[in-house]
Image 1: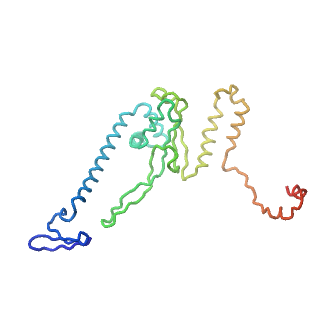
Image 2: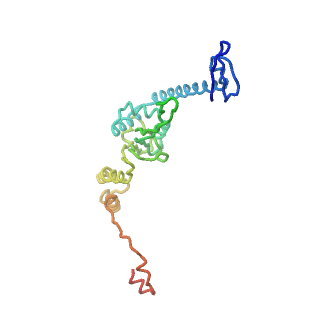
Image 3: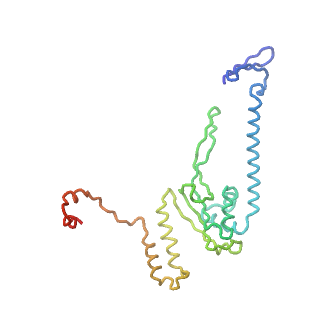
Length: 262
């Protein structure tokens, strides 16, 4: 909108090419319609209301935290090198907080996943009053995930329940296992190889109780299973040479030629 201002008869007159009419007065209210102010006020009030609701929700969740949550928080803080206060604030602010309660419930979720990785954060660039823009800057963030909605590019911290019974403050350390899986820079296979070779295989080889398999490590099927897992290594591989098949099939005329080619 282009506006021209001039003094006339002791008052300020404003002419706007967008509004298409001249209005008299020094207040912005004489230029903008009442509906515009209503929108601004509602937008501001809505933001304050949302912030108020978010604060109430956080405090309600904070009041729910007990020994079970403290166990999760302490494991995450140790593994990711964050303070327990930082982890707690992250958890009670997460929109997937309810997954923790579903994990604790009897016959609840079998796993609870946390990603700690770079996430693009929208930041306002206000260096120029005339040109405000939004910049996307990567920032490390810890968040709860189902594992199916976000790309995995950093570290995954996971909790696995080994029983269907309800998780309580007294049994959480016995029925919940904790582990971490590193996928820095998107190297998922290398992270898997390290996880298997340095963590899972040593644990499996030291396992004494194999459930219904009474022989334990002496059982041939368990030995075969451990051997196949032990051989998993993405660095050691067989590279097959690419072959020009045409030179082998060009002159095949009868079954004996096929046998010779084979």
